[in-house]
Image (cartoon, rainbow, N blue to C red; front, side):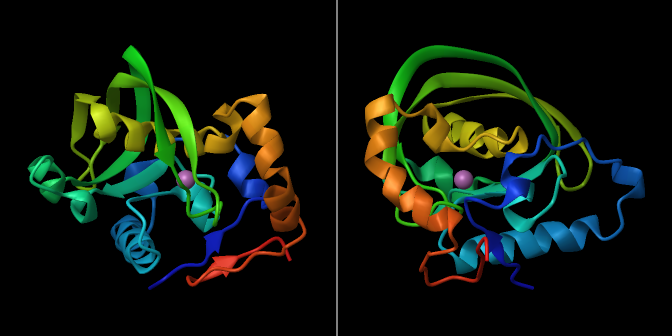
Length: 186
Ligand code: NI
């Protein structure tokens, strides 16, 4: 089932999420399946709980659409991250363009560290403690930020923030157009 994606201005996008109790979370598999379906329908590569209105510590990623000769490893990078916690960030800080399904029409270069360590449960509730680098680390950090109520626009320079102010004001007023199912402010 395709869920509506919450748009900037919706308060849930600013909430710090809580760990879920995986043994006591009805329809977890169904939720994950709906999150993938919602993400694919919107041509995204990542989607976090707050973007579908949930204050739960969960996100999904599928980098397959970005697979290339240079990055064949993206083809099989489809994962759910439950109760994710980044335990270390290191490496060079790089500026790379990002977008977000909750911020339609905004694409900006975002500074992020190049390497992370993260603990999480996968969708079969198996625990993992892994290290990621490069674009994988970037996408994970973007989605992880959503779990802490942070959006990529928060990481921009004051100048770039001023440049997108008008678009954000429109979104806060519910003025937003996109070709996927959304839940605007009003
Ligand atoms: Ni996002």
